[in-house]
Image (cartoon, rainbow, N blue to C red; front, side):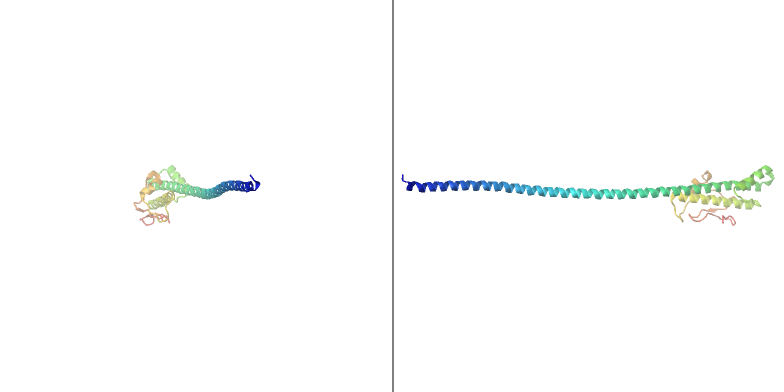
Length: 225
C-alpha cells in the first residue's frame, strides 16, 4: 500500500483518537463540575443551618437572660415587701402591746374605783385597815377619792369608758380597722376582763361610737373629758 493512501487514514484515526480523548476529558470535567456543584450546594446548606442554629442559640440565650433579669427583679421586690411587712408587724405589735397596757391600767383603775365605791356606800362597815388599803390603792393608780357615793360612781363610770376605749383601740389595731369603723359589744368582749363589757354603776347606758370617737354614757357628768 502506498504511503499516500495510508497517511490520510492515519490522520483520520489520529483525529478520532484526539476527539475521543477530548470527549472523555470533557465528560470527566463535567462530572467533576457536578460533584463540585453538589459539594458547593451542600456547603451553602450547612452554612445556612449553622447560621440558623447560631441565631436560635442567640435568641435562646437572650430569652434566658431576660427571664433571669425578671426573676431577679421579682426577688428584689419580694424582699422589699417582706422587709416592709416585718416593719409593719413590729409596729403593730408595739401598738397592740401599748393598747393592752392601757386596757390593763384601765381595768386596775376600775377595780380600785369599785373598791372606793363600796367603801363610800358602806362607810360604817369600813375598818381603818380597809380605808388605808383603799387609799394606797387609789394613790398607786392616781385615783382621786370621791367626796360622795355619786361622785365615786361617776369616777367608776369614767374608768369603764377608758377601759372600753382601750379595748376599741386594741380591736382596731388587730383587725386593721380605720377611723370611723363601727363595732359591737361582741367585738369588744375578747379584749375586756371576763369577756364582759362593764356597766355604769349608776345605771347609765353606754354608746360605743365608731373608732376615733370615745364611748359615752347617757348620764350627765359621766365623761372622760
